Image 1 (cartoon, rainbow, N blue to C red):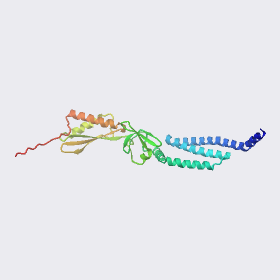
Image 2 (tube, rainbow, N blue to C red):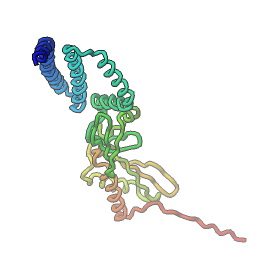
Image 3 (tube, one colour):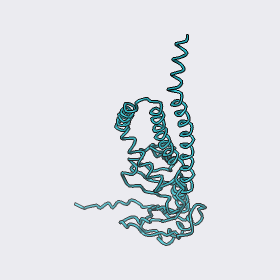
Image 4 (cartoon, rainbow, N blue to C red):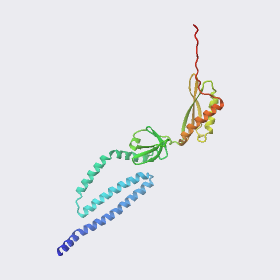
Length: 268
């Protein structure tokens, strides 16, 4: 028992100060890390950086600082840190290689959130998909199409091609074509189309709507109507105006192209 007490006393004398110093370093280090991450968060908020970006960056900084703190504590206690550094380096390399694709998505996501080629709520065309931006994540952009389909696009795919932001200017031109018989009054047809455009509560008065002759053929005249709308109302106006104009044409007696056939009789 006396030898055990002597051993414990010597152990306390040798290791006590080191353990105490390690605990003090650990507690102080965690407080300093908390202060640094808080300072970074406030700085990012003042600069208007997207919350999803700066929270992710702060978490990376926090993890790196805590790893450094644990290595310092281990060194203070007397644990060799060379093997720890080698293991951490090898693990970081393996994780980096495994996540190389995701890292490119992450980098692209950061670029999107910083430079803002589009924002949540914008109507965009990315590749073959057209829809409203429902969410911008670190790795993906989520679109909601007009038929309520959710499209998940990797951010690296988004930034590697053309992005058409339909909502960017706040207004959008809706083009509609109407074909009438070549014998019909073009001016009357134009007046009816413009009247239906102005009567639609979703069309804008500025820029002003216009109707032009787009194509002529032997039995038809194709008119193109250009109405300006808010991007969110595109399909409502596109389908609604076609129905309104058709009904008005019927009431006014304006008919569409008529197919004609000439039969020639040859006498023998």
